[in-house]
Length: 438
Length: 175
Image (cartoon, rainbow over all chains, first blue to last red; front, side, top):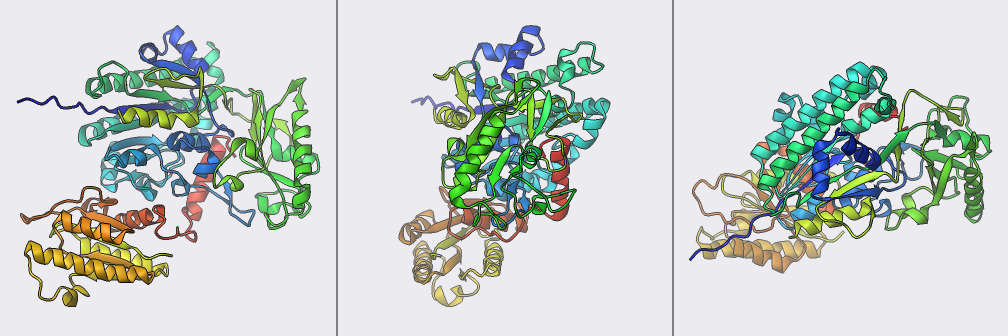
């Protein structure tokens, strides 16, 4: 008697940090993404909206938990320590909802997760399989779980990230570092694929985000000294993805090509016209003051401050009882909120509106941690890069950064077409879990 | 905080007793009330007269479970580490105790019978991961299961690490 064993079906997710849907479409046509083109032809490619603020610190946790920040608890790269103006960095330990791989572990499925932003330190949560933390991981020793893989990854020259400080200033070095980091990512994939059983694998490329921050202008400008390097890098990312796809299809256990395969970005990208410094705007309009001429942190705000901002555009009303030197009565907070929304909504640069929308907390967040979120979050039009910096005194200005994030131009590839033409990043985890349950 | 049981399971040559003691220390440092029931301490009296037969092993598990239940009723965490190779007996203890977290400690069975649990809450390998990471994983799992409160006092990052993170975020223009 012979029994037909049910084939074990795998799921793979490839993340390309910051790659916009519009660029995917363009590069498919221009032949820069031949592999992603053939992947898109046997799967479903969609434009995707992400959370607000549209930063990796929030987007990736939203993706990996399938929850909004009011539930998963991560609102930005930095947060206020409760009852203080001191800033803390949320870590993987602060994630309040289980990521995809923990939910899969309940079904005894093993996961390999490589370079996932927002998972540092790696041992802060259990992993049935292996996890290599991505950005903002800073110490390899704490970025790998279980630790037995650490030595191997160190020996293969695995980098968590490019040297962002050097790459921002030295664009020649940027491409050397991007290349080395991508090779390290490939080596890590090869190592884990060979040595670990898995049902779910996720790999994220973050070099795309770095390139786009530093040399976005080189994408369109064919005469730019780095245009060739930029295209070469995108081609190598495409080749990396193509290799993963082909290998996955051979072992996936699915019948059709592309089944069980996902790709996404955590936000889109566009060119910066101007940086918009929210704290400078609040100061100019009398909501924010400082005890010193050169404030370094929010602990330097004056006692008559009514509102202040954290990265990138999260505005907190300095309410009595909530903040240590709060001077806005709870009853007046709504009035201050309304004023700020009106003021920001009317703000323009050379006739162009800067602010697309100012969200109230309740419009964005739901869940047990909603109260931890800011009172307002600013979403700007494409081209205006909102910042929570305290250092810059001018409301508008530029640095040497060329590209900024966008909220409405991420991309998603799914094995089968979702019902909506435009999806939201919060819905992706449930799609993956459903696929994994088949 | 309610009492509950953490059951350390592992074959003869695993480091489960040692690991259980390390976890006990970690919880005591947090001011959490905890008692360890293992072969070497309380077990010397508790398991007196019992041998290695399946029936005796089952009795040992039952005795440990009863003591754990009394501790849990009095808001004490019971850490249990004993030679209990049969899955059915451990599952019976789980069913009886309710709030129960099983830690499978990997190790060599050395040819002796050992039936692995079907769904341990935590799987650790002291040889591969080291003692510190295993303790961290166990304690962190207890926090995530909301069996113990999360440790809010310890900062995730040192001052030096915070500086590096700040610099990286500034390089990318995020702050």
